Image (tube, rainbow, N blue to C red; front, side, top):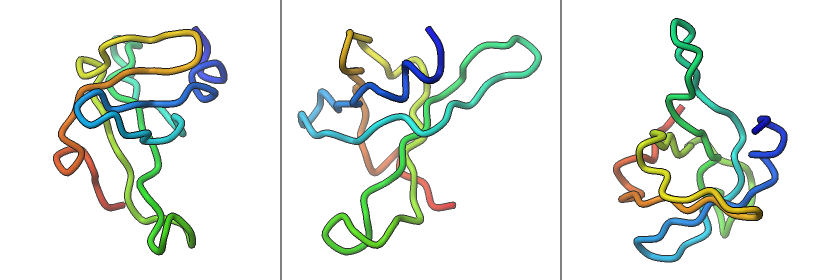
Length: 84
């Protein structure tokens, strides 16, 4: 699967059925060439607007299912939400 195909899929957290957004980037291990994590922009500052200074960095082992339209992950959001 190509990155451009992944970026078009919605990411849903199965723990609370919350929509996290779409994949913005991936983290790759340059030695092995394997994907380590997917990166999703965090929630907006004011009611989902005005940009964000956080992102979800979700390890590949937290991905439970990749479907034709969505990616299901199982995470505790506060644990994987990081400031940049």
